Image 1 (cartoon, rainbow, N blue to C red):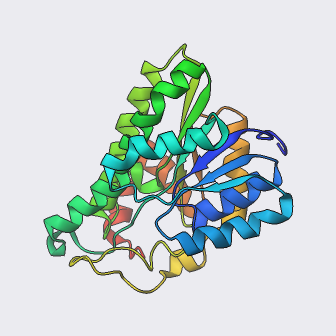
Image 2 (image 1 turned 90 degrees about the vertical axis):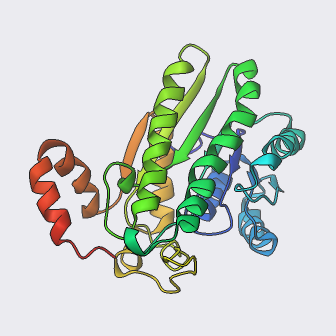
Length: 266
């Protein structure tokens, strides 16, 4: 559905690489106006330059979503850029690669602060504007492990499950306001998320998992995701064969449990 977002103001967090970068490029090609946020200013500038061939207006708004106190100021700056926001894509996040028993509580808290509380804080700060505007969309990038638990990802999976509880509730609360809510559940996407994933002591894993390395191209994912948003989907699962685990868990829970116990998931 090329051009579905032409002229819309789209704010993307975690826009300095991976899924966020791919979404920025695809949306720029569709004529959207972009607000790009991440912690790394230099990488944001690189993404902005990569979007430049489409002559898309791009504003950079460096942001650490874990600093929840800064959310109201970030929203004010985003609104200042174009006078409105039509869609917020909550993409910033951090993953995990460690056994629950080997993971410090500080790491569990860090993952929840970034993935859940950071997303909720920014969403709540922007929400009054969207309701007053009478239109808009809130997007939360979850994961297939937001639909089921997975080894080495206990805190990460918990943070994504929390997003589903929050945004499903919020969607119902926003009925009739013109504000839509979509949860997006990626499978293995070829990004650096596993290399940056936290281990039990809080250090980065430092290498890319085979599943991630052989995952879906981020540009392909971005097109699938934007097509789903254009159709008005409330929730969408996007990935390769690993996405089938969502259906197996739902319809064959005992089989799923046995498969998960035997899985060597990386």
